[in-house]
Amino acid sequence: MAVNLKGRSFLTLLDFEPAEIRYLLDLSHNLKAKKRSGIIGDSLLRKSIVLLFEKSSTRTRCAFEVAMFDEGGCVTFLDSNSSQMGKKESLEDTAKVLGRYYDGIEYRGFEQKVVEDLAKYSGVPVFNGLTDVDHPTQILADMMTIEEHVNKPLNKIKVVFCGDIRNNMSYAWMIGAAKMGMNFVAYGPDELKVDLGIFEAAFELAAKNGGKIEVTSDENCLTDADVVYTDVWASMGEEEQIPDKVRMLAPFRVSAGTMSRTGNPDAIFMHCLPAFHDFETKLAKDMMELGHDIREVTDEVFRSKNSVVFDQAENRMHTIKAVLVATIGR
Image (cartoon, rainbow, N blue to C red; front, side, top):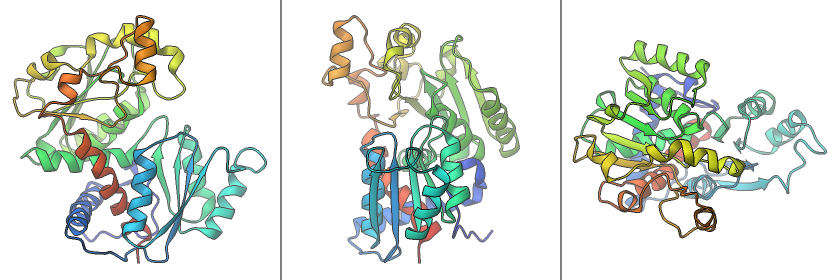
């Protein structure tokens, strides 16, 4: 099928057909090759976007900024301290103003409704850089990375997400895997109950597309995994939950034993970053002094030959560039 994504927002992969996701992945691979060949692009020449950040980030901000620059575009960055949105000006009014200035708007923050309302009122494409329940640009980067490292089509890939199965990465993976007919397992404690609405939607989509979505606390789910994935146990603003999270999630820390239980010596380890894998960060060090080991992955696994976390980080830029070129490009 012919794919045309001009003028589309990128709020969740639920809004895209598998062929459209495939198109974005192919474009990502092509744009990466183009950059590595030193070819200067102009697909976003004289295009501008604004980044609205209610949550700080390294990869998301840098990826959007470099992606725009590489193809001739420009970026304005606004955080919570430099925007009146929600304070002296309503979200609706802010969206309408920004839509008059910019060709697109990126939002990274909390409620999914905010990014949806920006798209509703702005009149320009809006890009979801992360919300409490979704992280679609990360999933594109993850799929691209898997294609680079695992010699199988996506619909033959098994991904096991270990740990906090209620976080936005777990939910984003449920949606992405369901769309692309993959086998996704959320592996975490029974006391963590996933959002039934998201799970049921993903379960139905997976059945339609030849995939499978599971939630389990049984370590046998690791058998034959191609990808072992994890994320931090406490997201930004949830630090007070750390003691309880450590108690629940320590058995699901990714270790050499976890990787071994896949029975697949070529299984790759993935993480969206930032990661607690040692005690070189202030939070990890402070928590350890209080008796809480917040590492979701051991340093041994994080630095192993099976770890592809920095390829993932690089691919954020290439896949975000693909989304921008496809939706607002010339």
